[in-house]
Length: 444
Image (cartoon, rainbow, N blue to C red; front, side, top):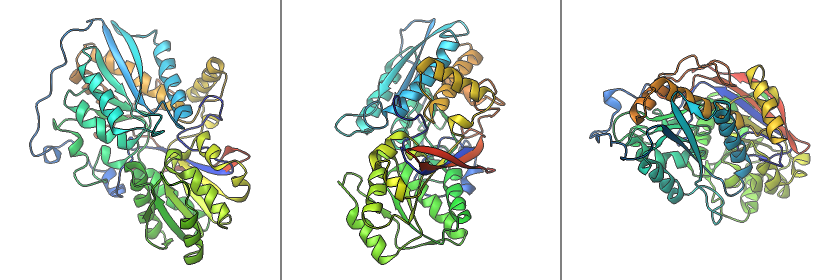
């Protein structure tokens, strides 16, 4: 986000509490809740491989033996652009600080768009095209992205066939890396029976439960749960519901998937008010899938005293802009987030924020630091591999332990390709911005 207030993930909200969660899970935004139990699963074993595995495809011939290409695939069109501008800025900072070198290799970076103007968000067609472009490029060794878990579900099987390393700065769906999402996950994303996907952001099997525990801590007794019917949103809503019920919060009505392409949700909000009068509404979704309109329509239909809780997909200025800052003068809104907001980072994290502000003359959005960390991990994996070979670089990345060269403190990749970070935060939307409320730390 350039002109808008720098923050993480899609969600521009006023008076919104963002629950920043630095998790120790990996980048997961999957469908169903099989969460906390899934965290302990290692899905690399033979029993987790597809029934029939494909051979790993060799890299295309040609290219420059001294050049390694790094692609990113993010929604560069639509309301997520401000957030992905910050991610790309972070990637570029990491590569620039390395002198665009890793060992003996010169690094080249290409920023790909997986969104379209017509849709205003990522599309399967664009993400497929981006993954195929990387696969067909003999110099391509690393794919940073995607931003959305649904997009990851599209590109992971394509890139896995060549074991081309993926490093996601934002995908949090549980099933991308372990059991806990839709049937067949994560095996269906690994046609070769091997891993190639990693993420530097905590997964939703921590974020969903933390959202529910926070709801209990502020006295929520009843909640109506909505989702956007996408991998990330529905998965988070499922996780939230399960833990909310375990904590004595009653989920009223039936969890409902919205059609985010509708012009408004006033009829739905009127029904929720008249039939249920919940203490809170939880929406599993993003700025791009209706979160801002839901906030606006809650106030319009007399639900201004009902608390709205949304996930990190709304942690961006776009969310507040979509709803209108004045909405949050009436509506209390909390956002959960995997990590800390930029202004709360310390040590090397603060140094990164200061350098970012000096270079780009604005505060970074929340996910900028994850773009930066992804770029540093890419450089580290290439150095460790010391060889221009996709499987070798992927294995080098998966072997990273106690990494402390970045801005997020010391962390490792676990056996699923997930980060071991496990800290989350809560923020509130107020005065057209996000205000830090509370820090959570949750074990795997």
